Length: 293
Ligand code: ADP
Ligand code: MG
Image (cartoon, rainbow, N blue to C red):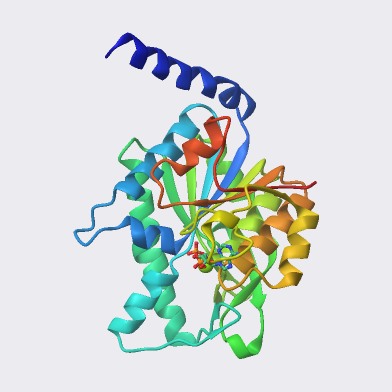
C-alpha cells in the first residue's frame, strides 16, 4: 500500500469515530425489502449484496450499536405462489391473503427468507436469531379490512423479546407475521411493522433498504432525489400524489416514527454494497433522510 492509500484509509476510519461514539448502545431498526433481497440473490444463489448487508449489520453490532432487522419478502412470495399456480390480487399495495396464500406467505418468510438472512449474518459469528411477530407476542394484530382477508394491522407491539435478545448481544431478525389474541396468524406489511417496532423500541434510527436510491419528487427522474426532508414536507408530498405503490407505507411509517420520537428515518438503496455503512459512518450519508423538522 502506498503512503497516500494508507493515509486515505486512516482518514476513512477516523471519519467513522464520532459516529461509532454517537451510536454506541443505540437501537437502529433496519427494514430489508424483498426487492433489494431479490436483486441481491443471483441465479446461483450467491449474493454479494446480501453478504455485504450481513457484514455491515455485524460491524454495527461489533462497535456497540444495536441493529434490529425486519424483512419483507414480496417477490419471493410471488415466486412461490406462481410455482403453485396461485395468483394474488393487490389492494393499495397490500396482498389479498386467503388461508392458502397465508400458508405460502408463512412458508416463504419463515422457511426461506428469515433463515437465509440469519445464516448470512451468522457466517460472522453466533449473533443472529430469527423470530416472527408471533414470538413473545411481539406483534399483536387484528384484521385490517375483511376484504383483504388475513392481512393484519398492528394493534400492539410488545418489544420485550427484542430487548431480551439485544441484552444478550444478539441481532434479532424479524419476519412480519403477527397473530391476533386467539393465535390466528396474520400477514403484516413489513414497512408498517418496522415503523411500529422502531417506535416501541424507542429506536434512534429507522432505515428502509429498498430498490431505489431514495425518495424522488418524480419517480421517473433520478435527479429529483430528496436527500433530506422533514415530516411536514413529507406530508405535503404524500398529499400531492408523487409517492405511489410500495413507497407509500415507507413514507407513512417514516412520518409516524419521527413524530413518535425516533430520531431520524432513512430510505436507501439496499442493492448498493455497504449502503448501511455509508449511511451510518460517513459525513455525507446517502439516500433520503427524514427528521422531525
Ligand atoms: P420494497 O421491497 O423495498 O418494499 P417496493 O417496491 O415496495 O420495495 O417500494 C419501492 C418502490 O417504490 C420503488 O422501486 C419505486 O418504484 C416506488 N416509488 C413510488 N413512488 C416513489 C417515489 N416518489 N420515489 C421513489 N420511489 C417511488
Ligand atoms: Mg414493499
